[in-house]
Image (cartoon, rainbow, N blue to C red; front, side, top):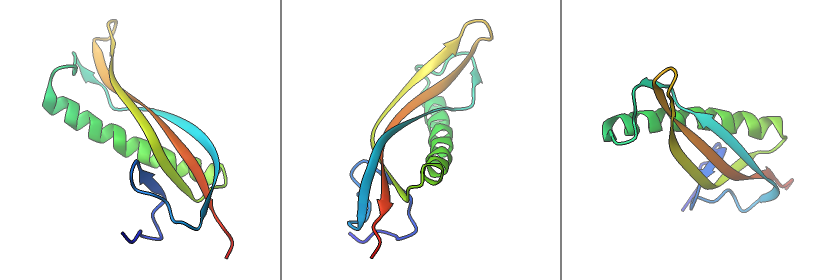
Amino acid sequence: MAQDSTNIIYWHRDLPPITAEPISEQMVEADSASVPGTIAHRDELWDQYYEDLMSKVGVQLEQEVRRLGGDYAHVLDETVDSRHNDVTNESWLHGRFIYMLYRRLNQ
């Protein structure tokens, strides 16, 4: 399977280019937008806020790759759960993403 050479983030089974060398394992965390009430068992809201979370973590991963001097991030593991603040009665999704940072080898 050919990879787009402009791709920075590779998810799970998608692999970075063979010309990339691993630098270090890293982790980022992100939160979705919040919603009044709970989203624990409401599938439509879960999907909507999961999409928001993934959009935010994509931006954050690209920023971290640049900040750390890498070229690619290969997401190895993700954990997403719902959070709730009883005081404000708001819920949101929280994600933790472990990734390997890669840099392009000089050719």
